[in-house]
Image 1 (cartoon, rainbow, N blue to C red):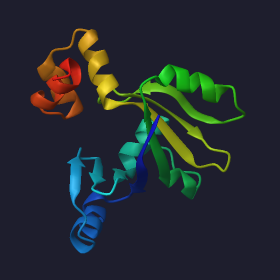
Image 2: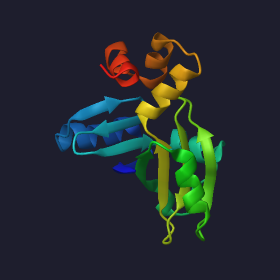
Image 3: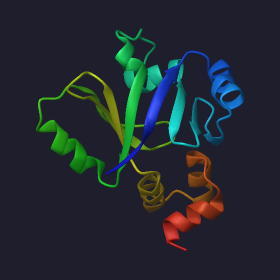
Image 4: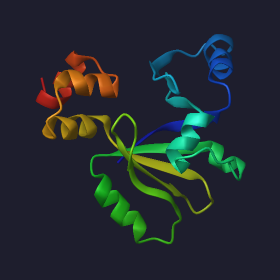
Length: 156
């Protein structure tokens, strides 16, 4: 499993992006609209979108620790879920498929911080290809170029 980055939940993406990108001169590496990743490996996620991914509805956050998460990726999400279920942990949700088709689950650590564990983008791409999705469809879904996607799937 690989640690990917911390993720800050923000109320106003435009304002937060301005702060980090313009004022603090951080370079955007990936821009998915509701989620932006900066060089140096930290992300911003729009609160309204993040809340729907967790709760499937717009519920108020009950505490400030729900406004931050650590994000990890694994190539075997089922195995990781099984491993963590053997512990005395509280799950926000078990495996869900995100709108971009990546499978993830979220769990609280022992201090109540959210830890998201998702299948790697490479695993998602390969899974979608095995399910019969076209290269173009997968590239559009995962916001990847066709060239990069072909490298992931075919190992070129």
